Length: 474
Image (cartoon, rainbow, N blue to C red; front, side, top):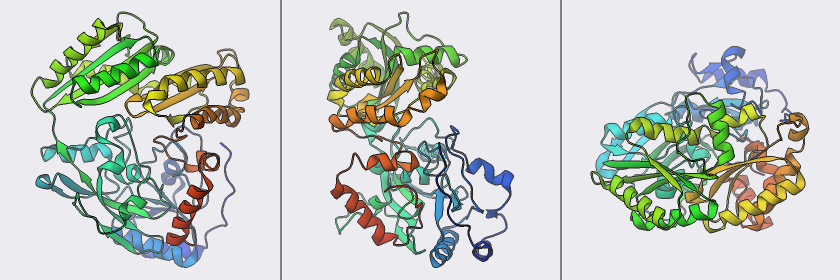
């Protein structure tokens, strides 16, 4: 990716002032220490910053932001640096990492809530809930690195949106430092509070443009007592949608995940990812990974048996394998989660994180495939994703003999083709990754003037200097 124009250098006097309000281990100018924070994990963006700030308290974050606001110095907030659209990479801005905001402040099982700071990883949040006899259901492939602050700022999705919703649906309260350095105190545990605007929602999915999330109160849920995972073969996306509808009814809402995978992507996983194996005796054109969870012992297993039996009888599925233990469940999930990694050895390509109404997924795939082949004959198309919530990862790769550089050079035009089809189905060009630097400009073509104007008005009201992550969101 081309680097954007760098901002003017930050005055050394401002750098000195920032250091003065932080401890000696809360900032760094060491190039080796800063380097991991400057490159997006796929290597698409590499930026620069005059200083890395790692404050340990909300008070320290506020002090830093006040100084930057007073001098008009821009800030790029960063969580675990697992974002996929470049919004966390600075280009001359001060880089503020929340990774040292590490406290789990409170877990209250009777409220089904916990309050923790932005630098706690998603995995650690799950473990804190588990230790209290509860469950925090958000689950991502990068959960060992992704942080709660980043999950909130990007409104993370993951594999269980079907049952529990996006991160937005899991947040009860937020603490955040505003662009002027004041602290928004909104850490409530309430499910009901109809006393005006729900201000916490402003920070969720805002990609750090309206403030820096420093802590959050999150919803917890009862732990499940049974779980069943199956890999099944289907003839196509239409059969998978019908199977999804049946699963919801058959299990009374116990479907936690429902993932679709095209055979081509599965072939690449088996080819490039060590210690993977074909999950079924046959090789169907499409696979579906189903996970059920239930509060009763044996409930999920019984529901899965009923579902697969009826699906076989009606010809919805052609093959199936049910995981018999935790190791087999992990094997099935690894086949799904390694799809992105398996694309790299094939040369990479045009990656799309899109969503359309669930009922239109089969039509979208058919129309998008035709449009891509008309634009670039011979392209290889991998489709996988969370069809339980309408989210597809629609990836287009060059043919095996094609020059990769030439193919990547057509990325913008090729993505416009795919996103044009998304628009015709009233979908979204970013289902769960956000806009960041990658899609901010293109998003103007998919938002109405009224939507853009309203978003801009909110931002002007909260950050009139535009110092918070200034390169993203219009």
